[in-house]
Length: 363
Image 1: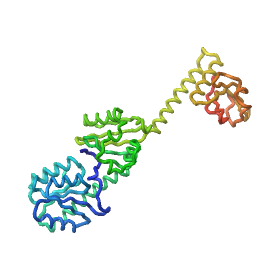
Image 2: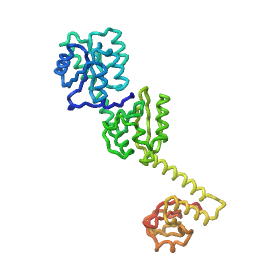
Image 3: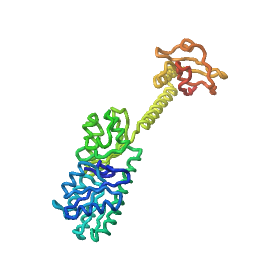
Image 4: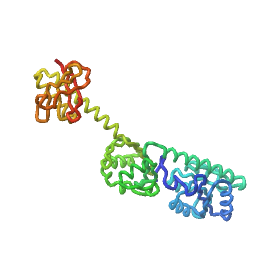
């Protein structure tokens, strides 16, 4: 069971074409067959009849429909009781009560239980058309909701209180399948335990925060790295009495960009600190800054140089073995169209033969 915007297989689709609406009609009365036929003739409806509430629940558990229409007085319980059972398992599935047996208190209780429509049966020939309109409106809203979820760029899935998938949009299905190393449809994923499908997620931050949301019934937002995918995910979890709705997106590029900026700031701070250190000689400052730049940029050499016209003239380079003369480390002078004329620190990429990074040196 779950809530929010997700749909189980029963709630998300139908077995006919895009125009046909699959309806489950629940009625214990003698005229149920006639009502089913009249309803089927009133619109693009495929109507299946079952005689009681238990048969309806069994049918819903077996295959999807788009709307349930029920009489109030059923053989084994009331239509209101059936509505409450449907809401517990399939919270957004449209349910319409079509009856003459209720009164104002029944209608009030039905509204409180989130009925999709309440239509009197009498006179039957006129009210069936009103019933058809009510069904069409409810199903259209449901289809629009599903379409929005499937168009979302964010991944989404819903879990019931037993941690079983009840719905995934296409992006959610893709990420879950990638993480599990499988290629399965939404229909085959529904009813599968997330922890059985993704055992690597047990005892991770995802596991802990999902359980936190379920226990506290408070929304949870977090970012965490999922190791098997080498991916950072931003996750928003919305709980209900029946389960969780989970929205998530890949934020790996953003996290890497932030990490790179933070590293750059740290390196620049360290290089400026060394460059301005009064207790170090000029040679010591050059040596330390070239070492910092070379290690960060993973280059073979760092070079202190200046430009004469268009000639790039290295003075000193540092290699992995220590400081050496430029001519010994580099195969001849390097020419590069650098506009600066002042001395600066240059980290040199020897493999490509181009500067990799540079910083001005104080006198």
